[in-house]
Image (tube, rainbow, N blue to C red):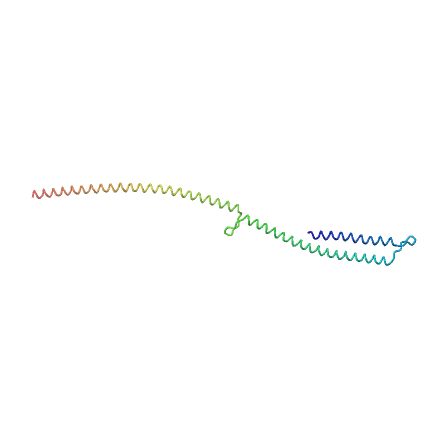
Length: 191
């Protein structure tokens, strides 16, 4: 961007310098011109020199103008390239912003906030589920412990009852055997 400003500045200075040179030559030529009645007479050689200087100046200006036009064309193409790069960089920047603000999960792009919100919600649901399962387990375990305790107590009572019945049955058998033995003795003694 500095180069065109420098070139324009130089052109203005050169233009001013060349303009002054031509004006100075014209002024000198008019001063040196001789008068012939109401006319000024200018020597042909001075007119030829002035015309040559004018032509040279015009050619220089044309060359400079051509150079400047070429510079302008190259700068326009450079501006076009820079604009294209700017558009490309803007697109990349917006893509990076989109990528920065999104997460890819199982091939699905999602907004980070939505993804984190969903993840937190699933985590809370999982924790509530775990808490519920723990409560159900603890409740079932307490009931199971109670039932096992009741079973053991009932089993112990049943064993005691069975033992007492077996003891009673033995006792009754002994008594029956004693009675049978007594009856046989009575039969042998009577017989």
